[in-house]
Image (cartoon, rainbow, N blue to C red; front, top):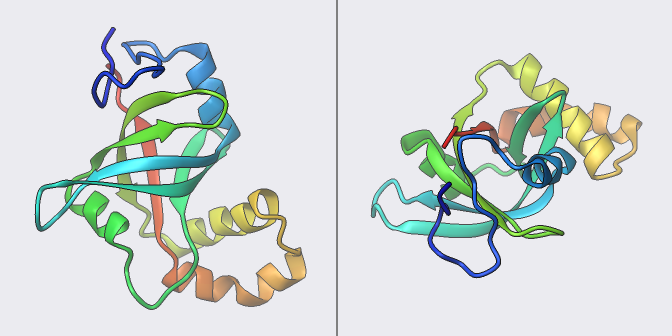
Length: 146
């Protein structure tokens, strides 16, 4: 087994088979950090972000904006990044992300994220969903077997 992301004290190792506690933490979703590789500089970039799990799939999302987020552009250029779990468990999980080009799928997941993760009222979500689909960062990701 190897420790991904360096020898940070208190981090759980991730090997060929993900530890049950890490899988459970990922399945809960919530706040974590990610480290991406800068598309221009090649330097690591770490930010705090919210992630979701729906039906066994993992997603990174964010508030809608007219400007593409740097972290999303970094993942589109360098799809391998690290998810740093930090709530209830500390683990650095190597993952691979990719964009979701299908607007219907983006809408389905964003609607669930807004209602189930962020407690937004469904009627308000339905009125503004088109903005979220058109202008929100959205990355689907999966753990990389170690």
